[in-house]
Image (cartoon, rainbow, N blue to C red; front, side, top):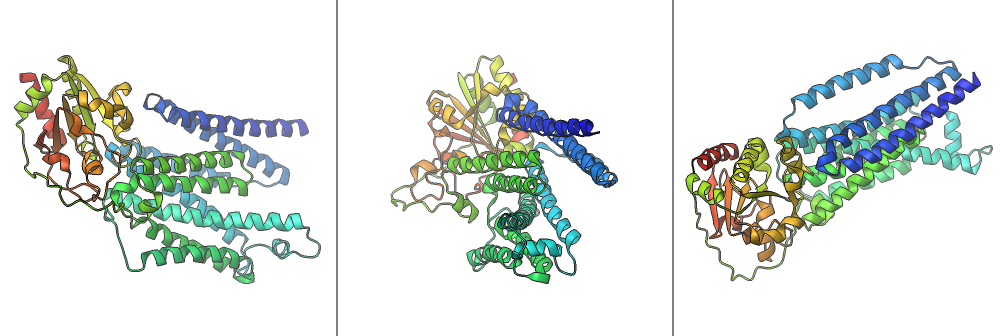
Length: 497
């Protein structure tokens, strides 16, 4: 029996190690569109192995202790979650993928919060969160060693931090999803004494963790107040942030959820959860920093829901606000006889679900000997890599998707740039107007090309709320209408040229 138990422990450790290796490989492969599918499958496989290993470990502990476990509840939860996940993922549209990511991230935070609440109600006894033995350990009874006291205090601190982080991630992710879906206004929501309110809640939560250890029979009440404050903070944390910054917010919330996973792993001595949480937390934080760098904004400015103020305009800049439209036939001629065409996708392409139509346009132009590439801005769309995923869905070759640093030097050699639904990421004011709110933000320098065609529904401003100088450039011609409809007509017109 001992040998069987030893083999079981070895299999659990092997499963955890294998799952961590698969997590690392999967995240590496997901960093490039050509291997993203393989990376997604690999991380899912790693998670499956981690779940099986955890169930095996729990089963062995139950066998030793003589318990039966809660496998009916566990299996029921796994089946229910799997069915809901399959249904949601099969029905969601590509344009709604950011909302899906945000919602699933919120579920992760909610899971961490509920785990701690289960500890609260499971071990609570008349308002006393832990049994008297644990309480004596915290208070440092005469027969308790220093190491045991510190271990118990560390455990309880991790428990409360997990409660706070999970609650913030849950409500913050739900509000972010609401902003993306339109249930909540996509603009920045402000209120009097906003910073005082948010900072006050943060301070209250930190003090609550300290008070917890002195609360005696009021420990359970303190834990529940901490949870309520964290849920409220999650809402107030995301409300001031505008829709343009949702990719940054989702990435940051994802990092917080990774932190909750790591903390839960520490609490339950689960190596796979610790490593997986650390990987998610670190990668989410790194991605957040990279996106802030791509917008030339500080993380603080994003979280406060404000664009940088910029400097003072010289007052001498005058812009010709003449709008120059172009017929579809003329646009077709211009593109059909060009040598090089660069396509710049934006969120408008996703809303119109025109990714397949733009790929048809690309194939038509290439059939005429035109070289076609795509320029991808790091924060285009509603989540990191949104445009890459969208174009990959329509089988656009990965090597044609050029990042901003690669395509910017090529624009002077491009005959025609086709901008589809992008706005702030191509606004020359970011480079020319020191008084602009987006001044200093790296952009796709499409204005350096020989000619620019812009497909747009109207002349409405982007998320920054400012006019786009590109639309009034003498080299720019506007094609107004729904992106999919305009591209379909443009395809027909090119066939007739």
